[in-house]
Length: 369
Image 1 (cartoon, rainbow, N blue to C red):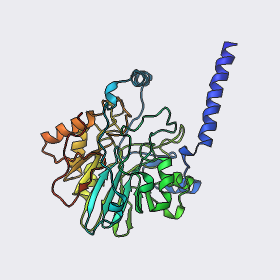
Image 2: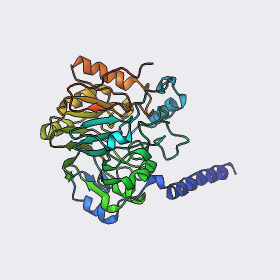
Image 3: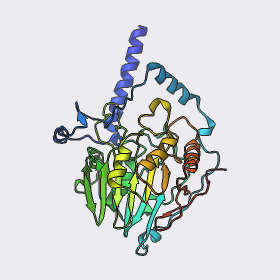
Image 4: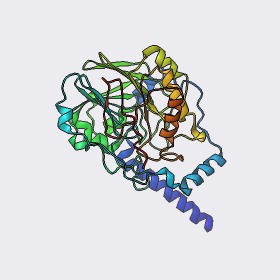
């Protein structure tokens, strides 16, 4: 009888999970059969899954899984700020009516940016929701009480660039609010299925493989490799591609790492597309148990040098707690390594623009109470 009860409970949990995944729009869509067949020609697509360019094990032992669950459940007060984070508000009219020649980059926390360049407005990984989870009630909550600008107040957006489909980079509610004010969406292969499922006009969706280039209103977007993975559900891991991005205008060149473990792709990108005026490089949410897919801060600085960056902008921190380190550990460690190696570092407050036409950038230690 006990076995029947336990089996019934387990079955009910599985059934409930399946119903939720099928009913909830947060999980997005899936590449079509024809798309999957077209992926077969790629050297990094095997057995129905995308692969990294170098061996990248994500397997954890049973003991590692148990210890990870224990560490997350134990909690740590240093993983969250205990003071209100400073957020500099943006004016929608200032964005819409900017003078010619403006080139500025504004961080929204984590990996989300507004890039204003050549008169265009570009959003990078616009996760502008409260929680990077299909179940916000149980997910990590955004540190800051507000964004630099409400999504509804954003002016016309020329393009959105997305690095991969994880919840902290691709947000259902943000896309739903943005879709009608955006001209075009640029994603790695397969990610467009989520956008289409959420009501984005398919004519606006442009999917690229590694090495592909797209031109949009005088700007060039190049989809470049990253060392990571993808998936929004229980059974779709590796079903869509992940990427970093190179963005080039007539005068400026930028690099956006997306999520990535350290690897030889950084030097290859630097040799082919560098140098970069600014490189936005992942530096947070790391742990030795998943070091292959998320860099440690000292590796961030090395990767920045590999891509031949001129100004380092640390990202993937300052908004959510998705790992076990303290919330300031990423920026403290990357700042220390940058100082050691004499690497120029930008540390703007959330919402504080970086003027790409200046030789200096914001560098205050705003995260300190």
